[in-house]
Image (tube, rainbow, N blue to C red; front, side):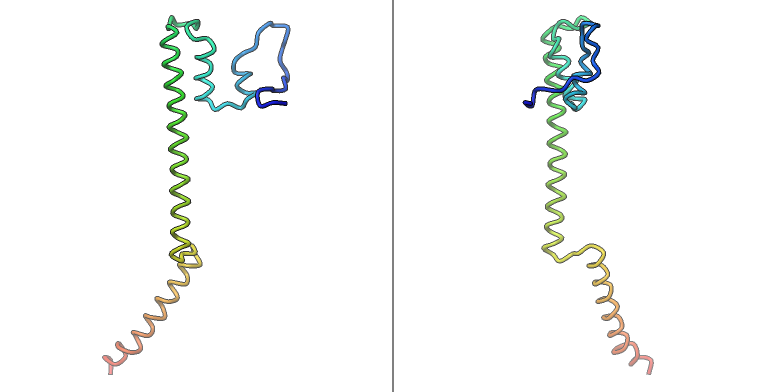
Amino acid sequence: MSAYQRELRQIDIDRGWIDFYTIADLYNLDPIIGHSIKKLLAAGHRNGGKSKLQDLREARNQLDRAISELEFEASNRESDIEAEVERERDGDQGVAGINKDIDIFNELDSFISKKFISKKKI
């Protein structure tokens, strides 16, 4: 089966038409992309008196929105990956790294207390 073919299930052939949302569901379309395709399928012929040009513009706007969202998600994933790589490079190992840093701090604090503070008390 090609990428464009879908198995039709539970479609009432007797009614003589198929709803766009059934097709969108078969292809598991993102709602924004589906809305754009719906406008393209009936550009200039939909209720509401919109012209073909207006429908095409609205479809393009919806696709631009979908593209912007995908670009935003991709940039966030890239930022997350870059931050993870930087943490690994710097030796940060999450909670284990923090615990190690706390242990080092406690040892240093203990050393300072023994060497300097105890002498002042004498």
